Image 1 (cartoon, rainbow, N blue to C red):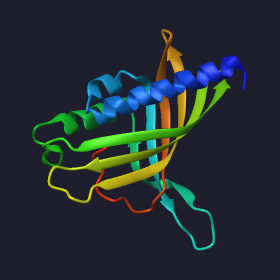
Image 2: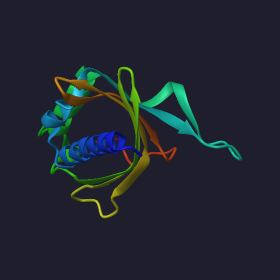
Image 3: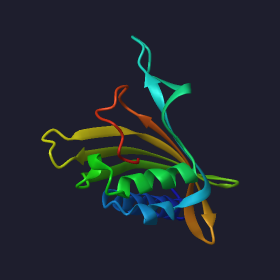
Length: 166
């Protein structure tokens, strides 16, 4: 791997690690600043068929299909004192790994694996979300911005209702 590619991969990894920290700490307003104004944030349902690799179902079925305004609304909901499921806020820890980066004419394509652990105040079990992300990033005034995220969860049934972002 060339020095330029290594440097680019390192920059994207640092972006993802910073993003994970903001989400873990519930710093949603700061997280929104990492997104481009035209963000598309999508998590389709997946389907398991006996004897076949898991397939992504993208027509009609999804957990998340968000743009900047709906992500702002979701973040406001997560921060609201009236959102009882997040009062007190749950403990969250994200691990990001296997980052791969490809340069494109209009920015970068990046893929990564993630594990997200969430435990709520009165929850002795916790929930583990595992999956892969396919992202598009581009520079805005020299700063990386996330312009697209496709999340493919590695389980067909959610361990709990979604009150987290990936």
